[in-house]
Image (cartoon, each protein chain N blue to C red):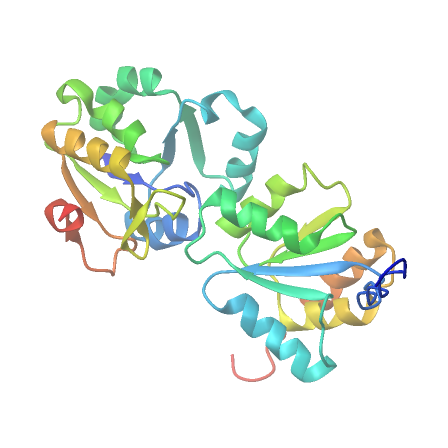
Length: 142
Length: 158
């Protein structure tokens, strides 16, 4: 190896361009939703991460979400508005100005996200909200 | 009705408390006793938003000790929370909570703590505070949700 240049370090995979998503929920919900997205839209490595609040105190939960969302732009999707997941996500927004929090996550919302995450954050959020609402319909009974 | 539940839960206002216990006990007011949070108005606002309109107050231990007799005899149903055992033990000092029951909900893992139940992790400081709480005439048990089985303190400390 005398004097020779070290072998080039293989570059990490191309950075995921666009907004990153992190789903945070109770129990196995986040993992289940992300799995469902991959079944429909294909693998989402580096695009959509899943975090459970199970066994995590407030500080650990916040640190875990922060590590997944990175510097932003990012969207943290949470299940319950009145839950520890949302609280942790909202606290984290103080440290990351380009991270948004959306509660009431559902599958139509996440699919819309993975197909449109190249959009600017603000119009993307409008779109996610609209799509998630449209996804709820009573189609029989009542 | 007074204080319908005294609970130790690191997450304070969250799904298990608001939905799990809240729907069962229908508290009209949540009181969080925490010396740090009592001074952090920005964080208080987050918890307030999470409650969707229900009343919530944040008190220091000293303030809560002054108000506790009134809370206990008031017609309103109050759910009182601390995020660690130490705050609850300080609240109970001097027999102020004698004859009451304290519910241990979420105390999560951190370095030094060992798992007692999936929702309960304790270090020596926590155990000391639990023994102090019991010595004040308080019945302590672990139970994360109303439907879950209740575990008495002796079993948690053994």
